[in-house]
Length: 123
Image 1 (cartoon, rainbow, N blue to C red):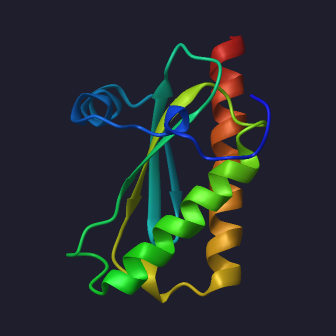
Image 2 (cartoon, helix red, strand yellow):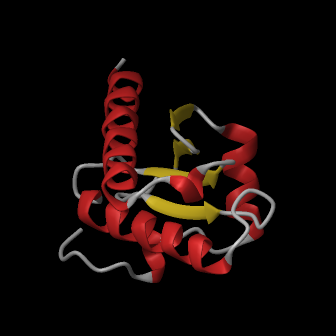
C-alpha cells in the first residue's frame, strides 16, 4: 500500500462487512473508552469501520472528533498493520479522553492488534 491517504478501499463500507467482523472476530483489543474487533480479510491491507453511537458519545462534535482521530491513526499505521478488517467501537467515557490520551490509546491498540495478529497468523 503506497501513500498515506484514506481511500474507500481502507474502509468497511457495507453492513455485511461489519456483520462479518462482529460474527468472526478473531482479535479483541481494549483501550480506555474504546474497543476494536478484528478478523483477517484476505486482502493485502487493513480496513477500518467505526461504530460510535449517540448513546455512548452524546454530542455530534465529540463523535466526529473520535472518527477523525481514528481515521488519522489508521492512516498513519496502515503500513504496519496486518491484513485485517477492524471495527472500532466507542464506549462510555470515550468523549472524555483528551487529544494526547486518545492518540496514545489508538496507537497502543493498533500495536497490540498487530502483535496478536502476527502471532496468530504465523503459527
